[in-house]
Amino acid sequence: MFAKLKGNIDSVDDHEVILDVHGVGYLVMVSQTSLSQLGPIGSAVSLLIDTHVREDKIALYGFTSKHEQEWFRRLVTVQGVGAKVALAILSIFTPDTLLTALSAGDAKAICRADGVGPKLGNRIVAEFKGKLPTFLSSSPTNMSQTKAANATVAPSALLSDAVSALVNLGYGRTEAYSAVMTVKGRFNDDPSMSDLIKLSLQELAA
Figure 1 (spheres, helix red, strand yellow):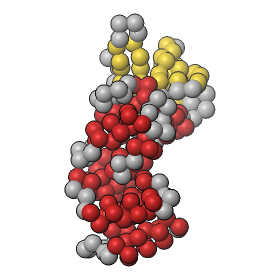
Figure 2: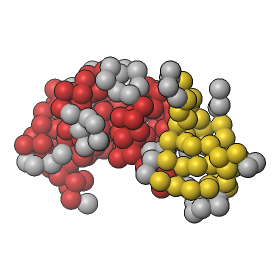
Figure 3: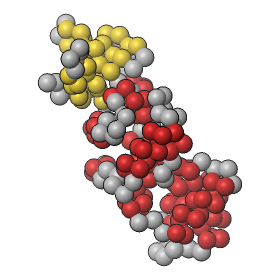
Figure 4: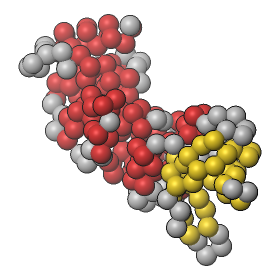
């Protein structure tokens, strides 16, 4: 089983990279997020690898970060989410933005990924509700979003109502949630509903 491959980019296609490792070309499936972080043809790269073995083939899935790999492993445990769908989700979300979308319970945003319909989108949100991965807290850049995710385990009615109010005003659930949680972080106690919405609107307009 492969855990990591280090070599040079031989060619790139949609969601695929052929990695030349000492003259041997390995076909590695990657998300658009990882693909965008790779250099031009001939560049030296190192990819973390998950190996999926099936009766008809062996498939390699590559990741430029441990966090993306961990999200991939979590996603494929959800019923109906195979490796292809997991890569599609990770192609439109970074680990940070996926955490925010799931924290917000934004199934509509998840459904933007190829192969994810409303039923599956709702299932993914439900699967992670109350048990969002805490492994992201090891990254300093994810600390604030991890704290926000943990808040969804027992969200207050005030915060939920504020998010709903912003959604009713036409904002997406993820951006509304992010704004409300950012504003909430500025207070030691819960602010009033009017202050929370007013300041969240200012945050969204910034």
